[in-house]
Structures are given as structure tokens and as C-alpha cells.
Image (cartoon, rainbow over all chains, first blue to last red; front, side, top):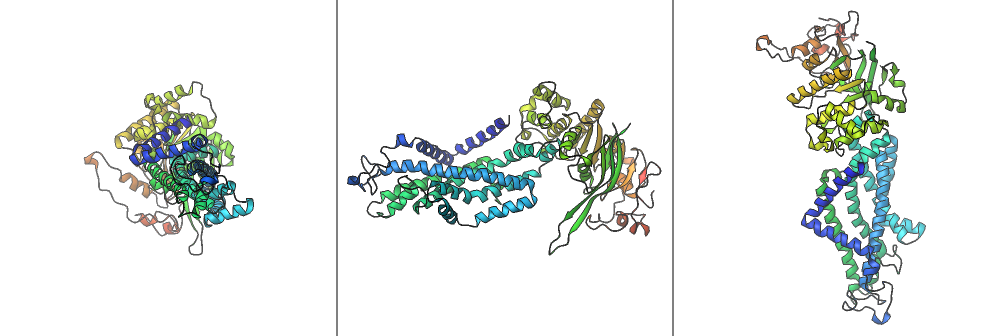
Length: 288
Length: 317
């Protein structure tokens, strides 16, 4: 019964987010992007790693619709596979961050006291480090690659999810229905899992959705500096990095992955805004 | 009738931590309150806002940990119970809350809200759950067809009925009613009071009724405990008993008389309620009391129980 009512709420709100024109276009683009990422090997016209030095830096045209890079690799195929890298790294990182942040924030908000202060101090500390620095720490420990990138993004957003969840739980804890349920003889686990979390989750999910956009930018940044995806794995950031070398000779190598990042992030943000409006939680996102 | 509830010298002191720039302060929200509640009786706790009556209810149910005193429920010392024992006992002592609007989880359908007591206590009702919930809803005068509604789809009075159904689901013996009608329209108030009266007769319940409305308490209750700033100042053994404490008399005089011929001039209470943070020595009511003497400002009167009509006053009426 629990999941049914939750689903009803979620379905209603997501439906409303799609109802506006902006929401429909942005949401539609994101669904398309996810499908492209999932079916990349079947959609991409060429092998993303196949080099053809005879045809390096070819301008957009036929058969390479978006041209080729300095090794003669098909830019379109690499952008399509890059969507896979960007989305999966960002989504995995945010999922880890959300799970950890919600657990920490809920525990801190529910139990309070010294535990709360300890958790919030540590979490706020992670916020005071620039994202790139956190990434560098992981690169130093486990070497460059997508694992480092994932952990760096997860840590970078941990504070946001923890603070937001904690704020929700602290607010909800004062509601009469919590006291009423305690008075029925409910255990703390029942209060937390059946009442506090289901009521706290909507704004956290929306912020998570928006954070995926930021995660994509961070992943691209790290890739650009060579700290993220390693060749030949296509990543939008790494592609732009190699594109800088021939910015004037063959600008398409840098323009198309850059466009992919920009359009994706804009779509994520626009759709996130629509979700906030549909769920009517703008005021609950403050103070986090 | 044996006592279902015995409250002895129950106290709660809230303290705020001090710091370099402010003093630690403490507030005696409830100060040595004692009373007995026999089975199937209704006791009313009256007093103005902030006198500690809601805190008293929560101390009795151990929703707030008392700072001192004792609560005995059906022979069991509540304050000696472990959290697990307490959770089990809660099934027998339920509460109806002041604000029905936030007393139900907004994500819960009514059927889920009313079935929750069984889920929480791990009790399987004899009948199928849907039937059990339908019966409970009918018992509080709600159409069982509302079972699949969400709280935002029903009215305040209906919400309060759901709150009562939830409280009664586990067949408690004690029901604490914390101003159950204070946030409802007058016509709806009367319906809820009528419902509570019927349920008491039907189920043999014992009520602890908290209200600031003295005329309602006089109508609804068997005996009355009057509170002022955390203390019990008078215990009226029945609703017809004349007030002996000047504060109670003022409360009684300030109730509205429907018959215009019987109306009299209401002497308004002078002065402010003292801050509960720094209570003056002596009787807390002394500054507002017409009969106050020097003794009242130095010595706190104890609740004397000699006559069966207890009053905490140096100069009772």
C-alpha cells in the first residue's frame, strides 16, 4: 500500500512537469538522451574507437555527419558513446551521493544532539573544498579514471543532500502526525521509514535530478583535464580537450561535444524547474 | 471504581543551555501536579494558554520525559518501563490531538491511517483489515466509502473523527483529549463532543479532557482540575462545586451566560501572567489576585486536600 500511494503522488507530479511546453521539450530531450545512451552501440554509425588516419579532421558531411577527429574517428559516434559515459558516471555518482546523504541527513535530523553536530560538521567540511581538489585527491589515491570521477562527484554533492534531508526531517519531526504515531507505539524505524522519509523525499529527488546536470559538467571538466575517462573511452570533456589542439583547423571536434554538454545541462535544469513547480516544493528547497 | 491513573507530584522543567552571552534559564512547565483518575470517569484539566496542561498530558503519556514525579497506569509504574514495554503499553492509552489538520500523514489514505495502529502494534484484527477499518470509521460516524480518500480531501471535523478512530482502534482504556475541538467550527465542536460522549458510554472509556473552555469542561467532565502556571490550584470534585480559588472564580465568572437576565458584570483580571521563566516567590497568582496578602507573596500555598475539595490558596473563598 505504501508504494502505491507514493507512486500515485510521483506519477501525478511528473505528469504535471511534462504538461508545460518547456517541460515537454526538456523532458522529451532527456528521455531521448537516455535512450541514445542505452542503445549507443546500435545507434552509432561507426565504431567510436576505429581510427582512420587517412581521413583525419574531415569536415562534417557524408558519411561522417559531424566530421572526424585528429585520428579520423567519427565524432557523431563518439558523442553518442560519450552520452553513455557522461550520463552513467553522473547518475551513478549522484545515486551514491543521494543514498549516503539521505542516510546521514535523516539520522542527523532524527537523532539530533552530538551525533547531528558531528555529522554536519564533517559534511560541511567536504563542502569547503573545491570540487576539482576533491577529484585530485581521489586521482592521487586511486589514479585517474571514471572511478575517481564518480567518487569525486559523489563527495562534491554529499553536503547538499545531507543538509536538505536533515532540514526536511527536522521540520517534519515537529508535525502532530509524528507524535500521534509515536503514541501508537511505533518504533523509531517505523517513524523514519514510513513517515519521515516518504514525506522528505520529493525535494531530495528534485535536487538529485538537478545535480545530475551539474555532475555532467563536473565529469566533463575532469575529462578535459585528463583526470576522468581515459582514452579511448569517449567522454565529452576529454573530446573537447583533444579538440582544443585543432580549434581553428577543425572546430567541429570541440563544438559538438561542447554542445552536447550545454544542451543536456540546460534540459536537465529546465525540467528540474518544472518538477519543482509541479511538486510545489520551492519553499522547501531553501536553507539547504 | 479503582483508579486507572494516579499522578503524583509530576514535574517538568525545561532548561535552555547557557552560553558566554546568556544565562542558562529553566522553566517549570509542570510543577508538582497530583491527581487520581478512577476508571470510567472524566477529568477535565482547565487553564489558560501556557499553563502547562498540554505538557501535563504528554508527561502522563510519556511523550515527554518528566523531570520528577510518578505516573501509575492501571497499577503499572509508567516511568519504570523500558522503551519496548512502553511501546506495547501505548495501545491502552491513546490521545486525540488538538490539531486534526496535521494529525494524519498527508500521504496516507484513511484506510492506511486507521489500519496503522494494528500494523505498529503487530496485532492482527479478528476480521479482515478492510472490514475492521470500515467498522471503526462507522463507529466514529464516517462513511466507510471515504476509506480511500487522502486527508486533504476531507474536512477538519472528519479529520478529527479519523484521529478518534485511530486512537480507538486498539481498544484503549484511557483516552487523553488534548483540546479536541479547539480548532474546529462551533457546530462541528458539538458533533465531536457528542460523539465522544457516545463512545465513552459504549466502550466504557476513561477520559482526561484538556481544555481552556470552562463551560465545555463543566458540561463534559465529572471532576475538574484547574491549573495556573504549571501548578494545580484547585481540584473540583464535581462540576457543581463552587469555586474556592480566586482564579477559578474568575474563570467561572468569565464564561458567557446565555440568559441576558442572568448576565452580570465580569470583573476583568488585572495584570499579566508572570513569565514562567522567573516565577515570583509565593503564589504565582498573587499579583492578579484581589485577596492577596503579604503571606501570598512570600509563601507558596500547598494544595490542601482536607475537605475533598482541594485548593491551593492561603485565603480560599
